[in-house]
Image (tube, rainbow, N blue to C red; front, side):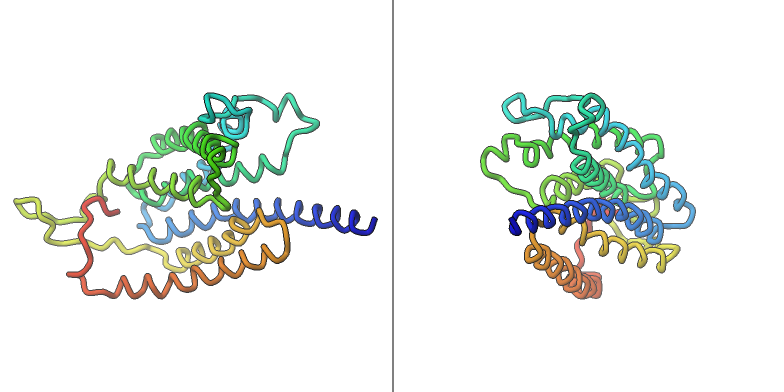
Length: 271
């Protein structure tokens, strides 16, 4: 009897932590906004803040209408996609509200990853169209393959905290966007043969805001990585990893940044 009570209490505690983790992931939207705005030029700050805000607002609407069903609906088309549904409206009594909120903030994070890679050279309306497409179709369909019981899950593939479903998809989308858009005007100076002769720096206009964004994102990672934990021991190891990894990554980034310029490869589509 006591074990049943303790198990029920434990489930409730981790249920609350699950939603708290979702709130931390949502708070990462502020981190992305601060990092991007702080490390870009002042004239584009308003555009960047609005794009990060609209990521979540547009993403919420389309995720309700179609994305959630494609993601976690009944598996169809041989594991390629979920069946669209309106369970959030028609199945109100038994709907998984916690799961919806948690997956919604993950969807918004996937969309926001791309914003920084295309900063300062994307029209607001065009970006809103992209945000709607990735939140309604791209993320829900590919996430269904792993987290929705799709073909990758059926093969035994496992993604604990989104390295595939979120970061890889967001990173690939960002890379494609950066290649299509090209560098910011004035970033590279080329000679008549097209060879880059000079790389101009575009310093951020507010480094304290950028640094604040970094710490907000770091805090959010504890929820991003840890919300799916089901035991205190598991949660502890996740927190340790989430602390050590960025702490070691920063010195590594400093060492790379301090290398002689001649050793740094020239990337023509750099932002």
